[in-house]
Structure formats: C-alpha cells, structure tokens
Image (cartoon, rainbow, N blue to C red; front, top):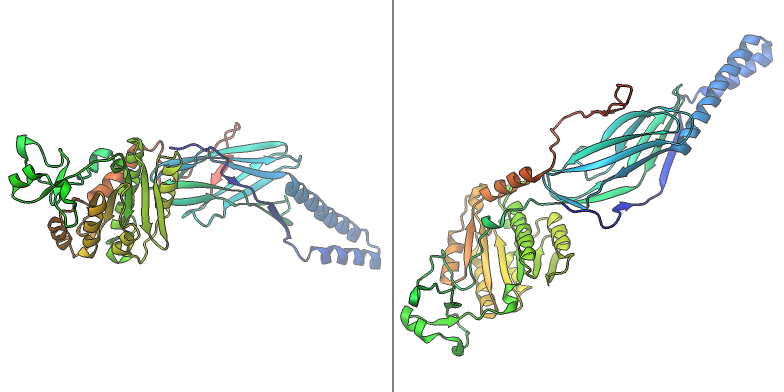
Length: 437
C-alpha cells in the first residue's frame, strides 16, 4: 500500500445553485397585497406579511447555507491493489449559525460503479465526520469526486445545490502473484525445460551454454560440449545488462480468451505487474513494451518512480489491434536487457521474431494457456515452434489468476460487504449519517 507524497486533490472552483420550488409564491404574495389594498381587510395583510415573511426567512436561511456549508474529502493513499479497501474521511462543516436540517451528499464521479450517496444533518457552527471504506474490484484509475450537496430551508421553499469540484485520484493496481509462482526459464535452454546433463553432471544453462543459432560467431562455439552432444553448442556470455528485464505484454484483442476479470488479458497484466515488482526488488532495471490503443515503451530503469509508471500503465491497459509480431518489430535487436514475452497467442507467427532476438540477446516466453479461459484453440503449434527454434518458454495455467485475486483478498486490511449500510451514530444515540439506496 502506498502513501501520498503529494496532495492528490485536484482543486477546482465550487458552484452553487439556488432554486425556488414554489414559483407561484411571488404572485401569491403580490396577489394578497393587492387584495389588501383593494379591500382594506386586515386578514389579507396578515396573510401577506406571513407569506412574505416565510419567503424572506427561507431566502436568508438558504443564503446562509450557501455561504457556510462546505464538504472536505480526504484519502491518504495514492494507490492500492484490487480487493483492498481504501479509507476515506468526509467532513461536512457548517460555519453559519443556521442549521442544515438535511443534506444529501452525492458523488458524481463517472468512474465509480456505485457512487456514494449519503444523508446527514449538521447544526450551526459544527461539523460531521464520516469514515468510509471503498472496495475496488477492478484495476484502473478512479476519481473520488466531484461532490454534490443538496439541502433546503425548513419550509421547502428553496432547494440549494452546491457542486464541490474537488477530486482525488487513486490508482488501483492489478493483484500480484508471489515470486515463487512465476518461474522464469533461463535464456539458454528451450523446449519443455527438461535440461540435458552436460559433462561433470552440470546443467547446460548452469555453465552458460546454449544451442547454436544461425548467425552466432564461431569464436563462441564450445567444442567439447559440441562433441559431447553431437551438435554445435555456444557459450552464453552473461553480462551485467542481462540482469535487466524488458517485459513485452501482448494486448492483441484477437488472441485473447475469456471475458472481463476472468480472461487471458487480466492474467497477462497480473504477470507483468508481478514481474515488475519482483525485478525491482531484485535490483534489476525493468522496462515495459505493450500496444493497446497506443504503443508504449518504457526503457529499463531502476528509478524509484519506475514501478509507479509501469503499474499505472498496466492499470489502464486495454486490448488493441497490434499483434505480437508487430510489437516485437519495435524491439528488434535488443542487447541491453533480457526480453520477457507474455502472450496467450496460439499463432506461431511471432516465434521467428523471437528467434532473431535471441541472436542479439536473451529472450524467454511466458505463455498464458487460453484453453483455461474457454478458448477451443490451444497453443500446440506455438509450443512446437518454440521447441524447434530453441526458444526458452514456460506455459502458465489460468488458475494463477484466481491465485492472484485470492492473495489480494488475504492482504487487504478490511472488507466491505456488498450492500452493507454503514451508519455513524452521534453522541445522542441517533444516526448522524445514513446511506441511501
């Protein structure tokens, strides 16, 4: 859970509107006064003074509320994860001496599925404080506010509406998987990761060896290992840059399976977010490449704000029309980092690009199984192409998405039950606030 380094409130002007409910009232007062002038009957004078006095009192009452009634909303978090409750403090203040007998508070945000709606009263020169918990079930950037206040005078002659356009923004990140659940295959061995044993009982990728790929320099051929396996084996030279990760996320709508929160798209985003946090914890430079409605590339970095930039992009990620092959063409010949591909694609067209990338640097593929999300087409052709091309890969099951959401539920601090009507009681034992359906 993060804390705010800066005030997230976007300050905008307040607006108010005072509406006369009884539009016939001016004509009624004028008519009563006219009847008194014509007849001289004192009853008409009493009616005129009483009606006019009530009108004047209502006007002064609403005018006082218009000047003195204010609301302040505070959240002390800049971000949270899906399934966590986000606390908010609402403070309704009345700086005038006339009380507000009822105040309806409504959140007019267009990003909330169920905007807040509350009713309270507030006496003169006092304030009411309410603590809420918002439960966010989907990733994204949410805005709390603007807020509309609606109240009236005791006679119901006027209705006052105030729109406080202050708004607070909070980032809801996708849930994260524990590092132990995402094992990344080493960039030297392809296929199903049944590593062949080399001489002296050591694994090939343990000593930095891999199969020869057309275009490799002959000076890197390891002749003893080549003779042992009866095929060309080259040295995999690990550099400091190979610790860095550049994560490619396939957002192509045509290859996605499932719908809503239970989809390959969501699992791809969960994997990318989890790898981002894991890499930064391991002091790696981490970057991101993806193409939804637009192309995005963040170069690998260990900047303290890198996690915020990547997670914000992932929280807002939407499917697009760019294929993984097109996405990889934007990142050809990457030498400065290990490329990690995350894709649910069943089309092996991108494997050729992955093989070409291996000639320049390290690459591994994480395959999201689309059949776990209802797709009738599996990834058999992709798996076969990866094995033939000696591209390291791992196929991940769809149950990881449920595991991620389960982890988020365990880590959240509070849970708000759906449909729960929370009330805050005053010192007098009666409800000071009440939620409104």
